[in-house]
Image (tube, rainbow, N blue to C red; front, side):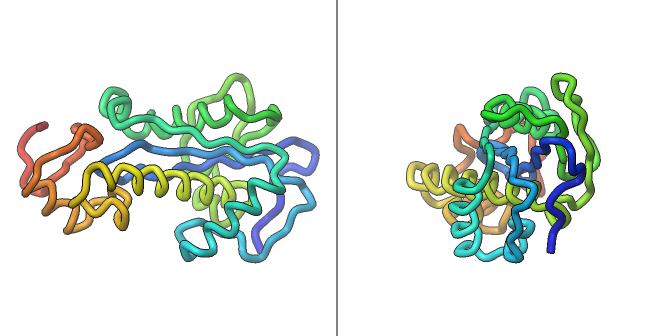
Length: 198
């Protein structure tokens, strides 16, 4: 069972992102404030769950959360500021949109940029330790997967409906064959034999 909170006396928002290692599409982040009493043995890091369970938990998180928000940073912005800063920015945007102001941020990972005077705690593999971070990981991943599914219908052949923009063999072969789309991250190494930006 994951932990319900880090600090019993503070309003905590768990924060996580999805799509950091992708070759295409935005990086998406979520922030979630859960009730301190909330428990769910199924809730875990989104990468450890089946798609069916992610979707089921997504609906529950939206219904039980005291506040939740999802935000993204585009591939163009990623190319401008780099993926690490884009991940932080996506989390900041998600926190910006929360209807309840948190007093502590629980961040999945080992680094974060200070947000507007709110204290934060970086927790390595936090999405497998705290319920609120796990909830954020699920909202971020399901939202981003939906976005890539929509884009896959406009740019078919890259397999985004299955790989969500990650660097699979199919995705890279499609780049070789068809070139890049407006949603590819030009600052990334899109092909193994890439010598320069497209």
